[in-house]
Length: 413
Image: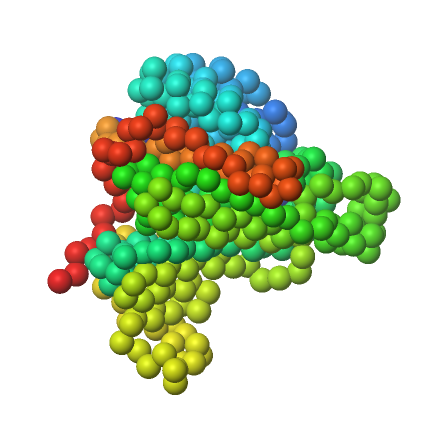
């Protein structure tokens, strides 16, 4: 069986779990895939290269080609490159891969440059090199259940969706002074919806964005920034080195997006205050709604006046038949492989797309539409929360493009 030869650019926490004690990152999922092998690795830090090499050898695989120059990796006979660097390097590496005719998949994150988005689109259209955006939340069971309920008409016509990225990241952000984590500079220098795609990606798929629908405009608003400053002031290992830093990123940023077909989307970024993790995907339609936080499906025939939220908690369990096969057959080992199983499923299907020449289900147009929300929200906030127009990165092709769901969804009659 021919294996897909994969190269990794970026070997930090997300790439191979460097700095974490309970994760092998994306690389671990590729190493555990019998259809793929990691043959080349790249990072600017030697300690990360050594860490990744040890991980590869521990799986019984041959030693990889190692380099600090991603251009050398691209020339090294790889079939596909996975880019898990900091956000600022995603575009440069992706462009180099596409120009070289090497399939590329980039990790998630926003971008501060609309120009970079157009560069990705133009390069893809000129080269036709396969491009994948690794938004793992599009592959999670909750978001796929919501999508399947919509595709099967259970929720009726959708009018509104919302999603959050709520995650207490204060330690990770401040810790960037030691771990080189890119979030520290991001929060010091920008105020925006900096991480929109975990919640927006699945919603965009549900609403057929870039396939008969598109984002038309958005407006963003950000709260004051006090969470990081207060956290650093009470944390001994950071207060002397970061105590004088003024963080630009507000504690809570909210964004509203309007779609051409009339739907609206609400996003919330909440990462510098104490709270529990939550993506909060909600889909509201004419026949009912789905709520990820409460794991509830509520349909129009319920007694709305006399039913409390607590009574419908976990009612989504009644709709397991609507889940795709990957989630009905997933093993405990696969669930533990990263982010509750969605990393394993995402990378399994990416490798198969590479091997079999299938279209990428999250393509360059999806990537730039979702990533651009970072730049557009920053513009809106700077203008006092004025509306900002969203570019049509498909140049009109969205009107006739077919929706590609990331997995085959069951049809329930």
